[in-house]
Image 1: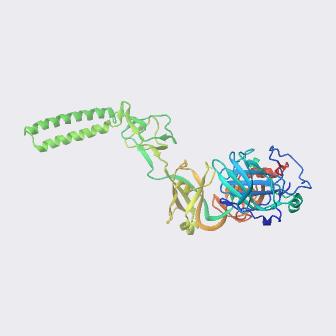
Image 2: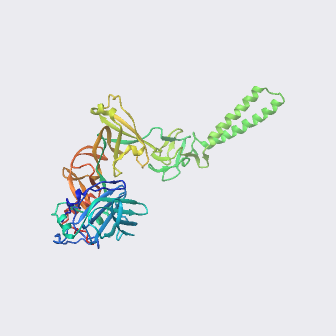
Image 3: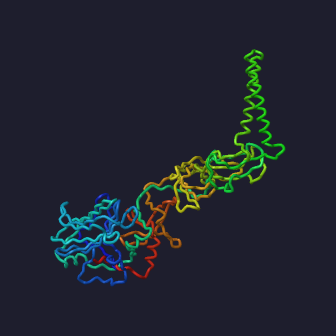
Length: 519
């Protein structure tokens, strides 16, 4: 395994990336030689031919792309072939289409160029330059696709007058212990990297909690009359969805002696008919001044009362009994009766929750009382979701925390309110990270990057395009989503956040991919 290091003769090897790219000086890849011509990576000799200088290798990250390129030192009159590997920084997958160009420039003026109208294989553009004049130049790469336009410039690239001088300036380097993981391998798996940066992180109270429905967004639906309950659907079970106005039950009093709705209906109808006849007669008698206004108003009121009683009995009634409908759309939280059960008027039949707003309640030990006023937000994880999430993702907010402790209670309640925008289940338990005092400008990384061997936590650092290094860490605050790094990493380094396990497997493999992008 050969690790390439850029020679000191390259005038400090300062690497400057244009077009809003992150500047990273990687004079040499540090990976292992392999051929991208046929994607075969069998064991090959790791000895450099005595007449070949060490190849140059650069890895550069911009906001849009990652460029990994390896090429022999530039020599007057000799063609240098470039294997330019472009990855999309949004997906970390190979660029599948587009055009690429390489050029040498002097004082901002292009003096030598070459281009490719398409990648020769996914992610890899093959380019070549034959310099005509020795000197120090800028080496530029341009990528243009339907979605991306990116320009990357590497400053102070030497063009040597002959091969001997190139070899003297770039002697073969000894092997190193970095892990080789090829671009073709990374492009085939769920892979991702993240730049180590400084950011705020909050001190945390780690506890548990429970998701609860918001009071007032649950409703009981009760029987409007006494009778026998019949379910409208066998699928009416806890957890099923109902819509507003949907018929849930019917209540029939047919055959009951004391609560026969059909009998009450007939009596009410007769009373309406009688009151209507009395009122119509009163209208005629009033016109003939046989009765007074007071008697007329009394019969009018009697008709209104009879009609109201009749309407109450007829609302929702049909030949199968009185219909009971859902008063709102939501989820059935609890069915409180059985099919065929007798219920009295006012008996709760079912509880429905719309599940739109929820609470998360944590019960804290009294030892955290001094920190309660510092709580600002929270992260949480349910048993049925893969990742820790922030209540901010659910439009959540701290609602209250207990300022009094009941005599029979030893814990302090802390309550958050949030929107149920991602199918949270009321009643489920969560792991909670209560965020308190912020720590400014800490070195912070995503927890997804962490690997563990026994009690040792570590990450894989991408030292170059196809080279990785295992780095043990000393950690600080853990807020469930991010973790503070006290030692082991430097700001600006790139770490693997997805695909670390594959790199671990590559480090354990006895078959070392051949290195050196031969073309």
